[in-house]
Amino acid sequence: AKKALPRMLLEGVGGAYEPREEEGPLYQRAAVLCEVCQTVIWIVDEAQNLANYNLRRRFIHFSNESSRPIICASNEAQKFTEGDNQTKGRWGKPYILKPYSGDRLSPLLGYIDLLLPFPEKSDLALMDGPAKLIESKTGGILRDILKLVVRCSRREKKKKKSRLTMKDL
Image (cartoon, rainbow, N blue to C red; front, side, top):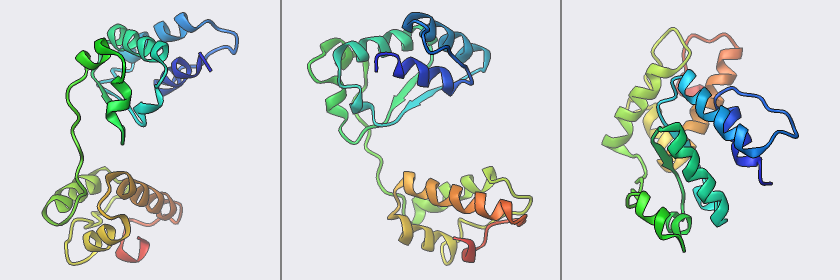
């Protein structure tokens, strides 16, 4: 639907909308709320789904209005700019994320551990324990690592645990 993108952007910064509201004001409110909420960066997953030229143009217009950097994640980055030289000129070349393993995985898990909602350190970064298990379950794919850790954290938080352990993963 034509209004789906601005509605998602608006919801992303905590905004609400009326079902019959016009597209332009939705984008404008999303840009204003972006400023009010002090949004630093927008991350758009599956950017190749913005396949329609007009939708891409409206998205670029929003990026200009919000004046925030936008990271577009896509497994087919070239499709996002296909047939649109202006869009192609605005986006940098794709950066491919490699799976996290070993020496790259441990610091990432150490950082994630700092963000977890537990009072005690979970030691996710220990290579001879949780890190190795997380790598084997997720293949080192960032999306899957985050899904696993978030799912387990939510479950264990409900149980009033003070940290994540290997058994919780």
